[in-house]
Picture 1 (tube, rainbow, N blue to C red):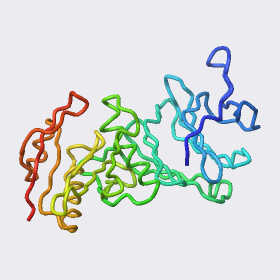
Picture 2 (picture 1 turned 180 degrees about the horizontal axis):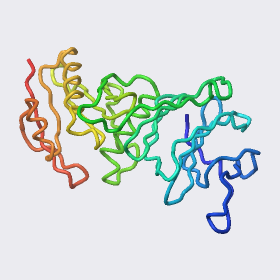
Picture 3 (picture 1 turned 90 degrees about the vertical axis):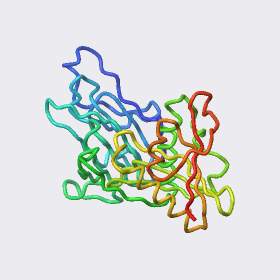
Picture 4 (picture 1 turned 180 degrees about the vertical axis):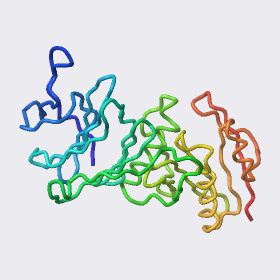
Length: 286
């Protein structure tokens, strides 16, 4: 899967109320012969068997968000939409799980999963399968699943969340979320029904000292036990590999979180980006 910018929709003229329901689709400026619901192309991706396009009507009432699958010959093979008359269905997040599956969040509240099938039967087995996953964030404690990042798709999602939570708010470029120890580290991801909600990493500074870094949790999942679950699993991984001491550099505002888990301040840590204060913390796990 890779984002592209090769498709476009025809531009409508005149009063909005007179526009047709569907807009003609163009590829590299040439007509494809296909039309899609909506007037705005939100995102587009190339996948192994074709293309995924997401459109909406770009109006105050945003009645639907549409998801289309085209094959490699630019033929429209499946079109699924989310919405209802006089209701707002805004796409707020789209996350790829692997090259055939992606999860979308609508109105920051509801999660759906789409799966691209290699074959389909009209009305019986659409090429683009749609499943409702539930409300996001769920009430109370989410259904947390922790696992190591292993596949290329895992790492794409992993680094994307690290950048969005830990670097983007400080205007840092992509790539700044990585360092020279990535290949020597253990990388954990936290999932809630397939949706990536948190990440963390541990590496060794010496045979006896392990360092926890890059803890990042989606804002809507904070204070729900996700960070604690990731931290405990990182600690377990470090202990299995012989760690006697765990260290980390904590932002000042989250020091109480680490103190709750037995870490103590042992000194000042470098200022991040010249403006984010940190403290060096440690925990003896002999």
